[in-house]
Length: 108
Image (cartoon, rainbow, N blue to C red; front, side, top):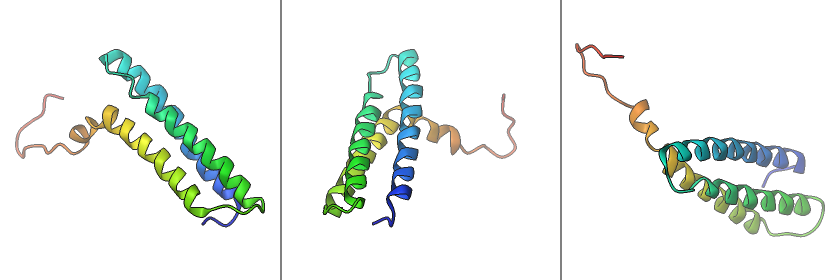
């Protein structure tokens, strides 16, 4: 896996911070649009990633562990985050990849 627990924990903490920010933004947007509380999936992902970080720290501290369990925890956490992102942020694809007609002016 990743050689060194410091780099591993830094990477996991980066994802945790990203998911906290997305959870907050999604909660506010869902409140305004009256969407169900899918943002809670981010918090489940954060919880799973914290467990993965603790397990990885335990594993890299010299104790025997299974790399497969660590990988499964990382995958499960990120699947929850992708599911929440799909529910809240899929509309951005139309905004980002919209094709403008040639020769016509936009009202923007």
